Length: 205
Image (cartoon, rainbow, N blue to C red; front, top):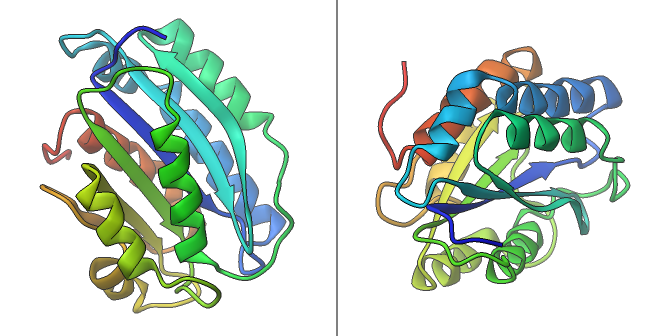
């Protein structure tokens, strides 16, 4: 894979708190974001002309849902959207093992086949960590390795989840956490989050 301006791992919560309708809204919203012209244009706008993206689903365990793809325009972004739409729900619904999910996501970033100017982990979920290795120390290891970790907290289950993400998940220069009220709002929130990450932290209206 040719060098990229950003390697971005999208780590998506598929734990038991996410029912199948919510899973459809989340995955559909993520796919729809990559069909937007401004997302595709942002991916191609940097000096290296592309962004590498992979998608990880996590619960009590973690599985790669979409392997690394280089996004350098609308055709590649559309292919990624199609792959996201068709990704099976693996692993099975279980605990919200946020720390182990982040470990798997950082390992996936380390295995990115493209040389990347920036590394980012995008964590989305609707619950606080409740199983396995805690996320805070994992976050610190990622930051030490040069990864910027951002979060999107879906507040339908836990109204205080944003504070948990701010304290235990995000880290690195310019790291940020966002929230949305529920999965119906996920598509718009993830679009704003992706633009901010791809453009290097600029706020998006």
